[in-house]
Image (cartoon, rainbow, N blue to C red; front, side, top):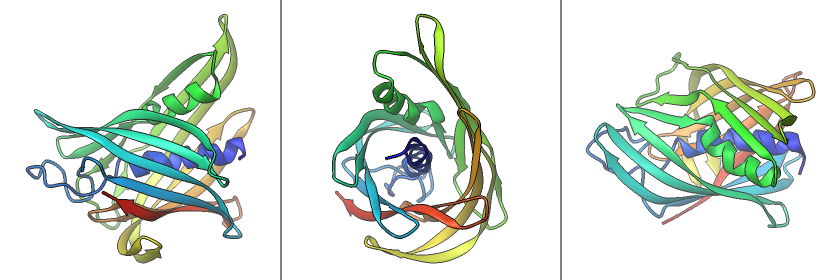
Length: 235
């Protein structure tokens, strides 16, 4: 599994983890983003020829009430196409004042810890935010993170990820192995700076009460490069 593919899967995971299944919690968050303990959601990734590349497995371990919202502890595991575990970790997702907040470093941290075992890792970033309600035409805030890894004070890896131009463009019906869903279609641009700059467009589909159903990545010429979609949900 290439580093670029892993990066794209991790970025997709950011959106997956902030759009957890519905759970009635005093209307502190909308049906898009509420939390349910024990819920497991499996996302399968494919290349442009529809060949399976791996899976992302998320499970909500714990949900806690806060004065201004809720917090969930989520475990995430990435497996390759042979089912071999590539990385795993736990992180926290917050809903505060009816806005979902996921610090980019919250999900990158366990992944990078595994990738750069024995190295000093520093992660800084701005929170990825999604409001309680989505509307066609809505523009969403940008997000970014910087990841540095090294040893003895010498930097070996310096990667920056910027997510910009986030917009709700329309509605679409999406069918996967997990079912058929009416979704909001969100677009954004992701730039990865690591030994040069690489950027790609992506489209994410969000279903009310479910979260992200499908995420697509496109190359510079606008051709589908890879995608990830929800393939099963378990309680």
